[in-house]
Image 1: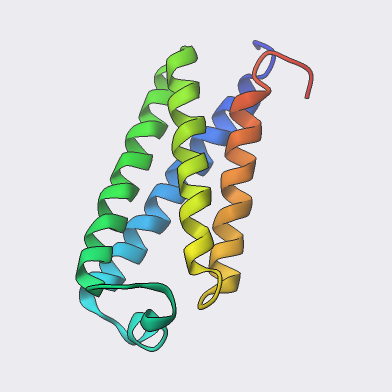
Image 2 (image 1 turned 180 degrees about the vertical axis):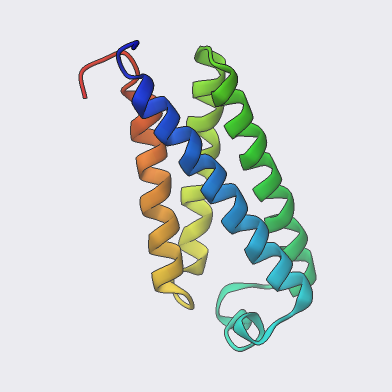
Length: 123
C-alpha cells in the first residue's frame, strides 16, 4: 500500500460527510424548520431560503471535491484542501447559534486538510 493512502481515503470519506452535512443544513434552511428559524437572526442577514440554496450548492461542491480526491492526483488533493478550508471558514458563522454542530464540522474540516496535506510525507 502506498504511503499516506490511508489518509487520502480517510479525507475522502470526511469530505463526503461534510458535503452531506451541508446538504442537510441546506434542506433544513429551505424548509425553514424550527431549528433554523429560532436562531436564524443570530447568524444570517437576508433570506433564509437564499442561505439554504447556498448551503445546498456548497454541499454538492464538497461532494464533487470528494470525487476529485477519489480519482487521485495532486489536483484532487488541492481541490479538497481548498474546499475544506472554505468550509472551515463558513462554519465560523454558525458558532454563535449552533456551537456543537459548527465545532463538529470544523474538526472534520481540519482532519480533511491534515489528511490531504500529509499524503506521502511524514505525519
